[in-house]
Image (cartoon, rainbow, N blue to C red; front, side, top):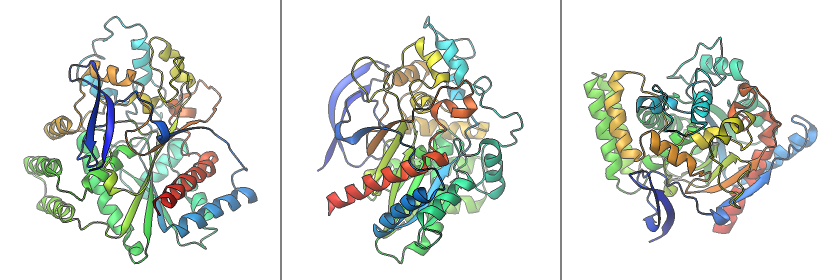
Length: 448
């Protein structure tokens, strides 16, 4: 049996546990470990190179060459998955709920209150004055138009971004690669993400149907931020082996829908999805490759369900202990580092286990708590602080690119979204595409 090693973790009482436990390849909805170990060959360190001006002849030529390489590897579609960067981006709602923020929690830790103020939606400077959009988001034109108006291509795969990507990658439609964007619900708590994973599954079944006649047939999901957590759950749902945890999750959903008096069609849909997954009757002959941008380390990944898995993270190695793969979490210094984006993506660093938005309705609280117990063993304010201090950048599974985008400091959070907004800009499209092609094709070649 193949195994993977997780060398460090956090005890249930919040202390650090050093150990080497062999885990089976099947993830079965296990939570990721917050390891401080060197990822070794799984991580590469890069500096951002803007390359040719977007839209220039050289830029289009390089993108077109990347499209040819992907098409020859069997890629038939690229889907960009995201939500809105203006909601509870750091997940402080849950921290408040478990006790701490409302009563000015600090436990004598200097700088913590300043840090929490930078994380709260009311005081982090991200909320738009004219924002008329709130979760659950719909994957429709109106939602996409509002997001494009509010944020452009910062933390948002805009219409213009996807249009330019498609035109350049396919050389104005000469290559048979379909591109699209998908807005998930943005309900950033366990129940919301579980439901979003099943919604994404249904969308993909319809979206990929035209590709199934081609062999080989691959699609690339590019997921920004919290959308990567939805895709991580999807990978676990797609596990080919029997999964008692998957069955339990569907039982929780069924009980929840029955308790709220959901329409019979909703229950029938849930049963149909469960039957499909249990029988392995999903995406036959289709390979899902995944790229995440700034996704916090939380849910584990089911590698058996995926082709390639790549994590791209904005990271500046500002630690002084010779461990460039770790983020720095030292109080009180971090309170002034965050607005200046001194260490990279602080959403990826801080929105770890223990954070979350609060469920939208009282009816969701029971199901969300049942899922939390199942999916995330770390809960409570102290647990979040401990997990954040671990400084884990790289996910336990997949390749990891730690990239210094060398963005000049600015005092406007809406310019950088605390290091979380650079991934989706047109100016970074070519660089990311080149990295994806190089890594994916190299990995495919090594398997042949």
